[in-house]
Image (cartoon, rainbow, N blue to C red; front, side, top):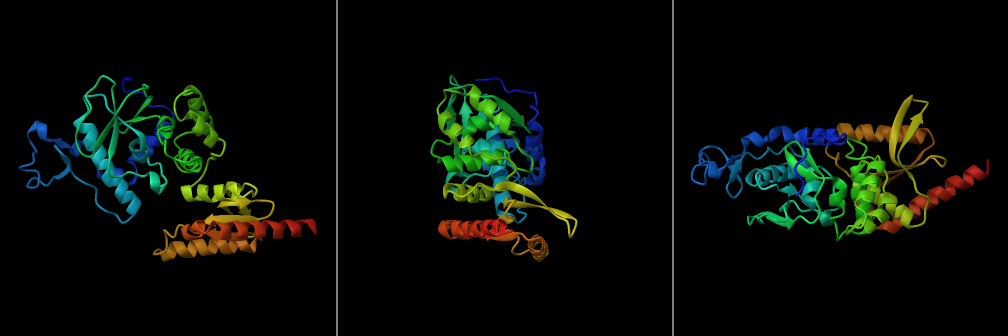
Length: 328
């Protein structure tokens, strides 16, 4: 098992920022108490104001601030810290889905696992038996990042562990590494790491997915929409295309764009449906784009499920705009 690195890799700066943002400020590792230390036990933890994170480990769960995904992840991270605290002297490292979720990488819902903590143990170490821990033997020594006290293997190494994922699901996760806000890696760093891992299980499939991975996305649903269009034989749109609107002196980024044809494909996750201010901002943005001659096609999760309708809308828009361009 590789020794935990104390050197912060260049890309680790972003990882630390992600781990320190939002809910992470509500949960500090210093609040963890181990039953074996004798101060907080199963007999007095309630009286002392603690909660049981896992068997033999007590702490404080973060408060719910309204966002379902962030709240779920915060509770998950609290339990992950508890697991690492329980086995801190055994050289364990977070593994697979657990490592990716701890880094804030959005996964397709089919691959999510918020109830289990997967860890990697040394090949000669003892496999822990404790709910909700699932231990895996170390076959290849991982490259370990020390992410705000959490030992996390390199994201690409854990990308390979998504054995049951389809190519498109791997692309969605890969795009998450290169996200527009706080990216974990660059395209070149992903390619270099894949080359280093050549010959390992999963590399061939990940390499195929890498051909479709694009930087600067904001959500896996944007990636899903892009792949839907590409798989249907339509031209690939530009991810987060920058659009300058001279009449208003404003610049916007559209999720997916065809610049020449002035077609924007936007994913609407309805996350702001109860936020009237944000809804007004979004509506004004769409109107400005339309005033500049852009055709804005909005896609929702339900519409993605009925994929043919989305494909037809974009295809018809492309035909219409290209015909108009030829007639000029």
